[in-house]
Amino acid sequence: MFSLGYLPVVRLSLNSLLLLLLSFSSLNPPSSPPPPRLLLLVNFTASDGKVFTDRDLYRKYEFALMYTFSNLAPSSSPPPSPKMPGTVDGQAFDISDCEGVTLAICDNSEQVQIDNCDGCKVFVAASSEAIFVRDCKNCTFTIACKQLRTRDCVNCTFYLYSKTEPIIETSTGMKFAPFNGAYPGHEQAMAKANLQPAHNLWFAVYDFNDEAKTGVNWRRLAQEEEEPVWCPIGPAENCCPRVEAGSLALPSQVRRREGGREGGREIEWEQEMREGMS
Image 1 (cartoon, rainbow, N blue to C red):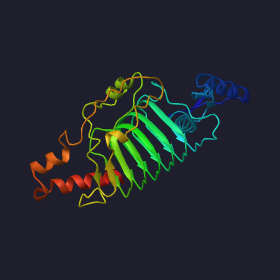
Image 2: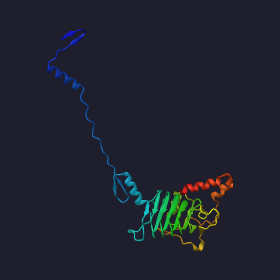
Image 3: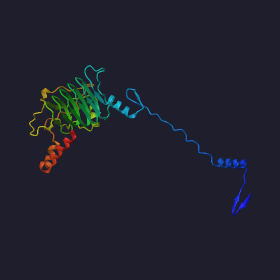
Image 4: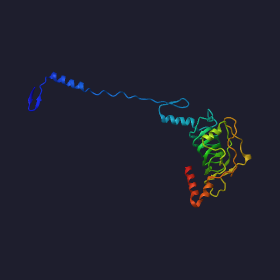
């Protein structure tokens, strides 16, 4: 070793240099590769046992399997079975493109949509929201819901429980009567859907296409015209007492008393209902 100014100078042989480099590398070892990433495969099993790895495909399949009646006819095999208590459990439900079949939802549900059915008999036990019936003809419905809304229907009969005033639009030949359905456990389904059996406004139909309220598009059935109680899955008593037409105050009448059209409340109410139909 010798000195150059204030800096020491070290002479090293090649072997010494290699040993020095190796000693530094041992002090700073190269970083080890990251551990392999674990790929978790999650399976989704539908109610009929079919397995999916894609969650979206599973959800679509399960909804079609459990919460849909679609493209059914008398020749369908197997024929449609009633949805039993506990199988729907507050889910939304769709019915579409059915002809000449009997369909029953014997459980509480959320919103129900019924589209393009012809000559069908349909039972909906207890919908906590609205039931939309569109483009149906020659059907008979026994349904309980928060509100009924129909559009573009022809010659349909409704045995109805409705917590609020039923609404029809661009529909003709419509007939209404009190709810006539029953099965063991129906009262519990009504309670889960927050429907009070004695508060039934089946008779208070609001027709958007009859401002003069002539009743040209609908009528109430006379009691002697009504069908007997329908029990789709076993005998039971109808838990909905018969409510005579006009025996209950209507929300729209209350609003009129509070402000009337001059206060804008009635107009706002009509607008709210129209928005709900869209």
